[in-house]
Length: 181
Image (cartoon, rainbow, N blue to C red; front, side):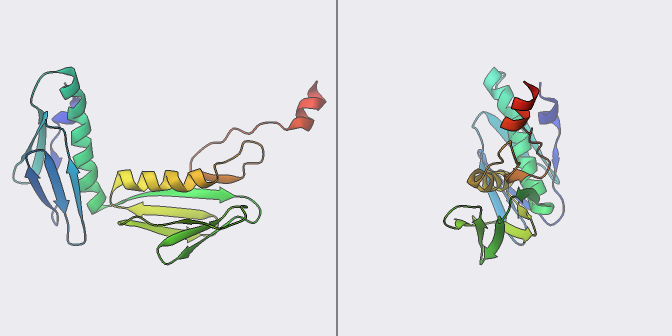
């Protein structure tokens, strides 16, 4: 039994939820999110809540139960509060700027790297931080990972792009290794 799957999802005012077969659409006045869910999961919309339950008692169905509930809850939370990821970059001469909806990164390459903003994603740049925000949690995380992949942090000097709370273990250089031997 999924402890998380049993909990109903409350629908806040201002959101409309449409459930059909195995798909859910959550809308507010600005945007909407759509998610297709597995057929083994039963989704019911009651007055002000959504209830998710398994159709069978198989291991696969039980595993998808909590996942499906969480995906729907993330859609509701994304349209009410929104999601964001903060990236920090370090390095001499490293810069980021916005040109329209595109993020332009100068990360020590011979050319600037352009990262186009997918629909529903917004970039904000301040000094050495990049904020990726939007309503779709999966898309925010994927976009932040794509930006981080441009120049991952290297372990010797810590130069590159990392998540705000990411801890990078630093390695000792050649001189430090030779001095101890």
